Image (cartoon, rainbow, N blue to C red):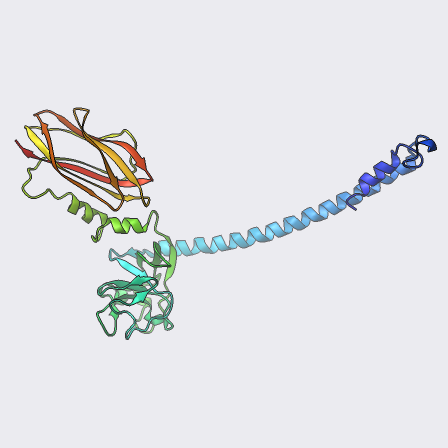
Length: 337
């Protein structure tokens, strides 16, 4: 009936008595024809209301399904939050995606979820055919694996939480075991771990930026170490809330005459391929730069010879940033004159 309203109006108010024949004379609309349009319009409204009702019913049904799913998710999160999850500080390198044979499946150089394993790696097995075998295991040089020493008892497994570091699947995932120690009998209890989302801000480049250290803090301790034979003086910046262009950082005035002879800089965390160009300034005048540092390629500039007098102010400022750089470190070292 989509065109019936238009057709009724066209017929009642047509130009000629016989449509298309001028000689038949002008048509005079009849009241009966005009009244006939009303029922047609009413019928169209009925159809529209029926279609709207059908759409509303489908929409409500879809929203109810989504709401139920969200409600279940909230319940899961609340249960985990109230359970008091204890997040391990150990590095869990990769997780399994299928059953692993404990007798010989976690050995040095074996491949798991796209990662080549090394002796000593900690691996999460959460897809064992026998759920009682699920847990965190240690990669061995050869032979049978066993549970990691920090997760091989009911007390240690109770409410444990950890983050997956690598893998074709699972990088950055957070996993927990929402069971109390009293509910766990190793070798008998089905250990069903729950995946609770992605670690905020986690990225493979952050892991690479650790340079083999357990944490970024340990890495900073390493790169902040004063080169052998240098005097105590140094001025550094460590920004972990994003680098802004033109910002002056780490201003410090020297208390004695000295010479700056070394500079080290590294992007600790940022987008892949991100860069920072910065200057070293003395009394707000450029003394060295621009120096460019790229994520994954620290710079270690030796052989500087920038003389400073007592009271001179040393600082850094940023000229250019390419990519979201969230953690950046730079330091200069000097020796007494």
